[in-house]
Length: 111
Image 1 (spheres, helix red, strand yellow):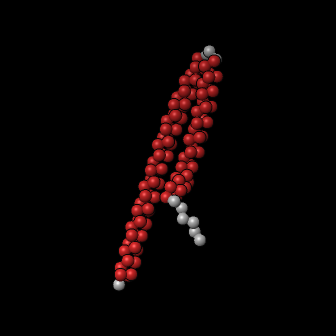
Image 2 (cartoon, one colour):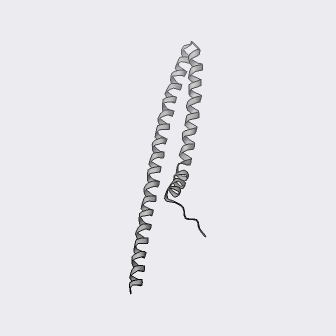
Image 3 (cartoon, one colour):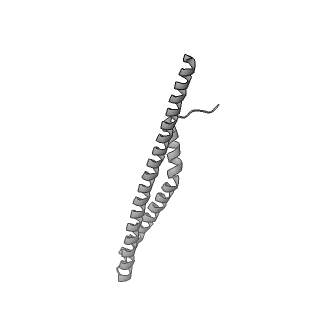
């Protein structure tokens, strides 16, 4: 016999599947950002002009990484909302079908 899941369990399961990949991208960007922060610190410790330019470049890459993290976070929120909407539609459809079946059953018993 199949186990009937609650609405919240079903919703959470779908969301986990959808955003797992996005979470991996965010994690990768966070690691990249940490590496860039250490690189900037190392370059700033050196006093020459070339090191300062490298540090500036690393800072720009760090900003780019931050923007990518924000982009992926927004994408994750969009996917969560899509999943919630899709599940709500399914729930609504099923409840309407059950209501219709209940009316049909009631008509049959009344006859």
